[in-house]
Length: 286
Length: 136
Figure 1 (cartoon, rainbow over the protein chains, first blue to last red):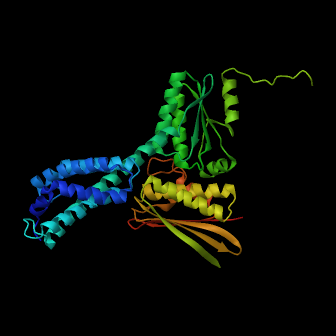
Figure 2: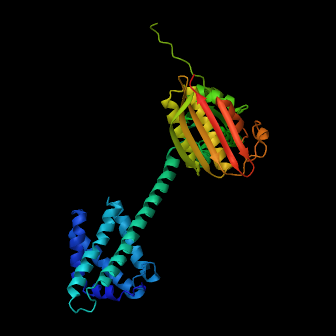
Figure 3: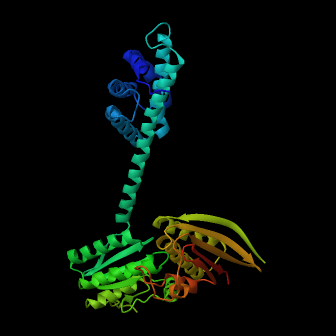
């Protein structure tokens, strides 16, 4: 079948008011009043105008350059509606509703009209509207992937806080998996905090790390060495019994790095290092 | 007599897949009530081997199944890739020897962390490592 030049569809779109009215009617039902009629009408009317231009310039080939504006409009629409909680099917259905309007228009024109209400017209316009609907689907998927990767990055930032425990003592409680990307962030944040707070003690707490394999260990060692290069003493705390046994069996050497089983021990060690001694107050009555 | 149930296969193509393999192995280990220490050992071994599959094999699969033998349960994990293979297995199993940038303790460490360890490899054919951890 030869590529349609869009002449028939263009003829159908010419009776703009009628098409618009029918489209809005058909699109309203699946949206179940979550969009006001006025708003829907404005959107449809804007889209019709953009589509009219696109058809005039690029026929029915939605991938052609003439459709750049229309594709942008649909992508924006898809993103906007997705943010308002519309599912991709609902957005696409609204676009597909244009078919109803076009078919009805083709039917009316059937008796001697210039477009001719024949099967070819119906097929042609149907394919065209399908392609438009798919554009909204694709941009929905793209927008969502973008949101997911943004959130993953945010999570990366969120899950690695550097907290000040005492004057001159900062700690990083690590939770979850420690991969290269996270290690990089932890290291950067820790080193920056050491500078900002003028701290001389850093504690890396791995209570929340489920398993320490050679990669995690290597990342930990690198972080400790980097902190040391900046003149800070670094302690690793939160080494649970099962982790300790696993590390021994793997043959990982922590060398002269101070390690403690709990964060409390590490804090006490660091405070002693800064010359602070913790003493229990004697209660007079006993 | 060893019987096996619940075979599950996961692809290893990205770093995230390594995490997924680790989670699956941990879930299975908890199911058969491996002790906390043994769970951690098996999960760590799986983590090392899955990463080896990714780093040295390019990509591959991890197959995890639950075993029963003489009233004891166990977990078998098989890591298979179609990468370049290991030219010298003895050397690869030497602690501290590395062909990459790691610590060189992964493969040798994984062997020590599990009860059964088998490696099948040939240059150009890929590598398959099978490990089993039994309940006590």
